[in-house]
Image (cartoon, rainbow, N blue to C red; front, side, top):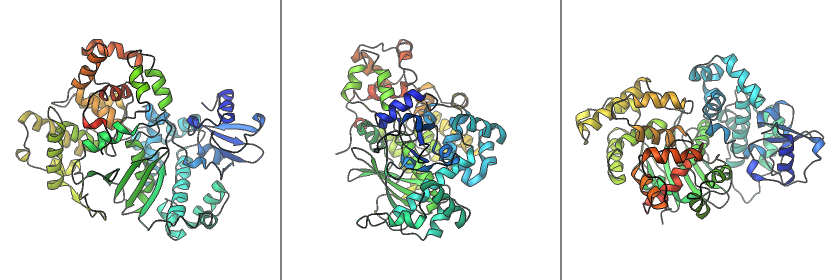
Length: 489
């Protein structure tokens, strides 16, 4: 969007928050960059220039605005609605791959050369993978500076910087303040959280309907791994350097997030996975406008706009749970998953009680005795084949997954039909166009609305909803009285 100058100028002059994260405005006279909704008086159009990423602004020598804090804007929805190389690379960078494995590690995960990745990211985002990872480190550093009492040396290394000097120079360059000055700006009444526990706000583009989002996560929660407590969804996280617990609660203009981490180096990854699980980088206005073009779907959208697709923090975990849920009730699927967690999950300590384990890894599940699984033999075969393929790396589910290729791999496994593959594509891989025409709830909702109810006819009608059919699924599911559609009381 940053190449459409006229549209960008209009967005800045109207302070349209919908475009936060889509592009960034750099002011030539002040050398400051802002989000489109910055509350200050907009600069003259001739003094504006536009960039596709904060990293590109920083590389061009612009500093982050102290008023609108562009580094905390929602992420671009582009990276969650596309499956090309750039989008897959951006999802991996957000997951901390460059910080852990460098650009060669990023290239290896994607199956391309480092030169190809550099070239494509520079062409579309104006910055290479190292610059994009550096911008993310700067944002993580700011969070740690403002929400903890950690010494600055600990902040530097937890944020992923290799030296104190690089940390100091980067913070000064990006925010025009030293780390100590950033911390000194905090209001005295807002006491920073204790080390290891961080409280922050996750922004999103309005509107956001929390009913089906948190309702689905709470209704399908696996005991020991997830719970709903006092208006918040809590779950354990398996992270690169350790483990964590996320507590997430919907607020009118943000998601309240509390993270308890065994290693603070996991902060950016934990934030990225929570945002992805809650689909916070979606553009609900564009999605709902497209779905409203169908006159039979429009009333559902108008009644409760801003529905998101409830996703996951662990793609392999969701695939396992999807198999456990084949042809059984939600309660039965939770029971199966709970037994696996108790027997094969890694135990953890929860300071608040209630959560006891991390969900078992594919490697742990591949080693179990199939005869111990209380399920029909055919589903047992499906389960054991999946976990063995995941453990061996033959099938890989992750942020970098190529959606069509992964679909083909899953369909080749015994017991994997279109419904199972599409629900994994929708909720684990994040494909916004995944569709479930054979789902009984979808067919029942279609029949009640006057839509075609046979899979072939419904698929043909749903062509007009593309590329947002996964969101249409949420609106159709919401016509039912199932607990997944309601916030727990």
